[in-house]
Image 1 (cartoon, rainbow, N blue to C red):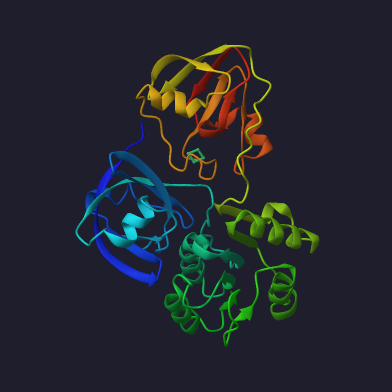
Image 2: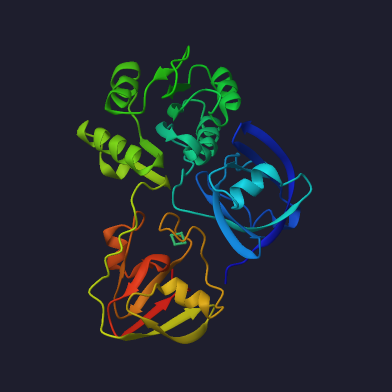
Length: 350
Ligand code: FES
């Protein structure tokens, strides 16, 4: 079951003309439920104009605080991000699902050197990771390359500059602006030369343990390819897609003829449904008012994950699950179309 908890908005801060930081108060009795690892996100549920909307937002605050902050950039008209930027007030209560996600920084006693590449609102989970890395060991170093149009449109700009001053010898930022050249910032988009400048020129003496990439798909591919061309192992590169430039492929998988009998296990209950070969598993489940977990419905988070225990399905889009996980039967149900006359998916076995 997708559990939501009411959380009170403690503070709203304007970050840029089109984005806000929203801080939730975490009551004592929910501290455990909302404990998180830097890099994770929460899902908010809100009814707007009679329609239930769910949106996932990464947590930008440190896990050590007794509050939780997210950054919300206005991207949609009439959607949740517009509501959050124009109507939401301090003291309002929102329904929030506990933190989840696989883009994680795990604390370690060993010193760690981390590099991150973020663009736009992709900075949000990186903020939390930066704070955790810098606070967990006084030898840790962090290099951040952060792309935006201008400093004015840079989310968490002031907070980042403050952190840079606080950790002057361990935290290095390269603001990269594409609109106008600005003092102290690189000009252009994050590209191969920016990656090489930061890592091979400015910080060639640092041996990096991990690389975190967050932003649009094009940037992630470019940075990931450049890192690998420079000999970085794929296992050291973690990424989180924030927006996708890819149009969801409409190609139907080699589906079974006619209908598929779908069996769903959720919270130890079994449901029997019928779906068409071009239907999506999650859509079919939600239509029956079964309370399956989901958030982005775009194959970008992993809230809707389940395991196939009988039959086969194919994902329209998958940017998260590894080949090994797919072999183990994991599937993003928001992207899954059936390939066999019977299909059994288990939300409990993940
Ligand atoms: S709901 Fe986000 S990947 Fe399926």
